[in-house]
Length: 77
Picture 1 (cartoon, rainbow, N blue to C red):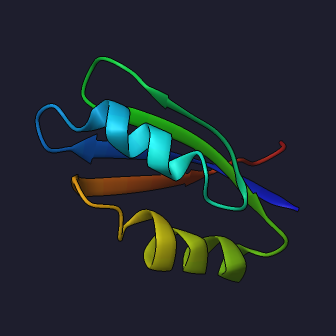
Picture 2 (spheres, one colour; picture 1 turned 30 degrees about the horizontal axis):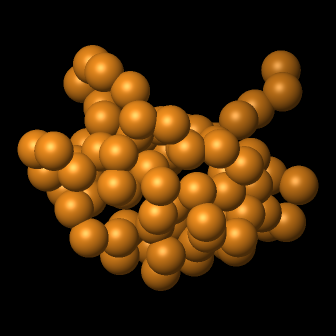
């Protein structure tokens, strides 16, 4: 199982709507709207890195109102 945090910037006033919509995507563990340089932080999981990448590109990045994403895979050192 691969997990990652996805940091999302949105259009002004869209953070809450984006977080609500993303929370319903299969594989998303949690989606929260936050303050700071990013507007939404998502924790997601998938069976492989490739599946995680497909989820980000095909599902998360297609949500209306998103301007930029940064995916940070979780590592266990």
